[in-house]
Amino acid sequence: MIPEPILLVDDEGIVRSTLREALAKNGYIVEEAESGEAALAMVAKKHYPVILTDLKMPGISGLELLSSIREKDPSSLCVIITGFATMDAAIDALKKGAYDFIKKPFQTLELQVVIDRALDHARLMKKVENYQADLESRVMTRTWELHAFHEEVLRLNALLLAAQNEVELEPLVKPFLDHLRTRFNPDGWALLVPDANADSWSYLVKAGEKDWPGIAKWGDLGAVHEAQECKVEMGYSDGFIVPLRHGDTPLAMLILGFDGRSSFYPSDRSFLLWKRQMESALLGLHRALALARRLSGQAGLA
Image (tube, rainbow, N blue to C red):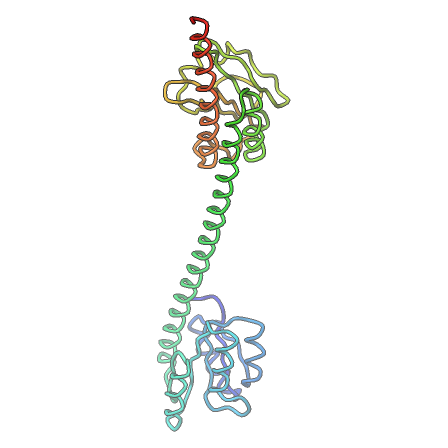
């Protein structure tokens, strides 16, 4: 049963009190209005899932009340109480949006059946309303996420295009690391690069307030093919080591450190996009340097 009260509208006090007592005995919460005008004032302040109203009342009639309620709170369901002589008016009320009607005289059980049916319908309407609101919220959130991701793609594509003009490693990686810092907020980060034969590694960039361990503590970096949580003690409570590679060729090794548990994880699609673009930029420079070395060797032979 919906916890909100039923609104009972009738200009006869004895009718209201009799119905209220009968409904209260069956577990319903009932609030009263002695006129259509009073009912409208109450509806303006509070939602009632079901409104039980007499059809013929002085001042605002039940039919006029129905029309006004449908304008103010369309989710409220109106049940019309009518006598035999006003059956045509009751049918007209149904056409104008009343949920149901009950004819005088009636038994309490008859009224309870009608009210229960109306409450069930109101409950279903509320579920549909909540589902629609949730769906709209999800669509808006997803739309915002897609827009933000699209903007991120454009920014990283611009960085990749700019990297094609770089012939040195440090100026090439700086814009990517700046983007990484602002986007994922690591407390410390480092980038290690291999020598020409990938036999040894060195720190290219180190940032953060912690002291980074010596190269030897990282072990065989060339054997790291997948991103993983750091096993080396480096002063941060949470950390990740991320290989930047092209197939079997190691290009660099990224280390990220976080003070406290972060929401970052290497499978985040925005980070994967950053990683792919960073790898593409590094690969471009790697190939350019390899070509330069080859051409230099050929020139030396000549």
